[in-house]
Image (tube, rainbow, N blue to C red; front, top):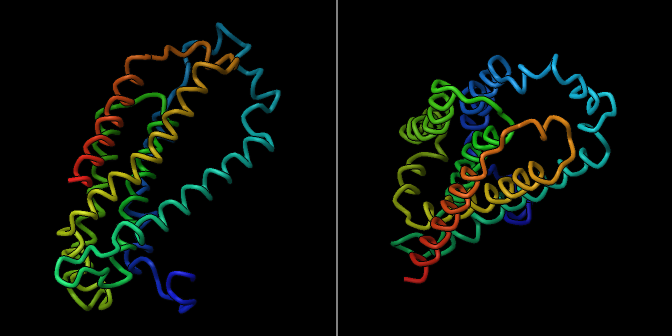
Length: 231
């Protein structure tokens, strides 16, 4: 409301809002619910695995408010950073032409982040799981192109997607937002895996090389972003 003058202006096109749960984030979570397995072979050999659930260690007040805190932090970051990043981004006028460009960047970041969250909760990955995750992200690019191609869907979003894809700061901002949140989650997941006393975590074979490679990827992405912006 502060950014739009308490006018009730929408941040996202209505078609994107309606398709969020149905198209962009549904299949990966369904695959997770059906196929994911965690330490199945150890259930009978190590009955102490059930001790953590009996003690209610996975859902406490601390865990709940930790989730709320992360949600508030990420929502503020995703909502406000596009407004700052896309200022003076229009190559013709030097200004942010409409409110919809920032919304397009924020929504694209949300789709990518929500799907990448699966990397931190899923224990077993299959080729089709990865394919569905990638297709879920790419489906937004297709749907956004369709929505902006005609005034019949949403006249206010007409040609916004085509325009925003040609703005360099859109891609730099997308990389920055996703990298910031992804690196936070990665650090917390790695720290929990190596420091917790949970019986289940102790039995998991954590590959430290995977974390090293991902950290290296994030570092390289951030360096590229900084270099490009400075140039």
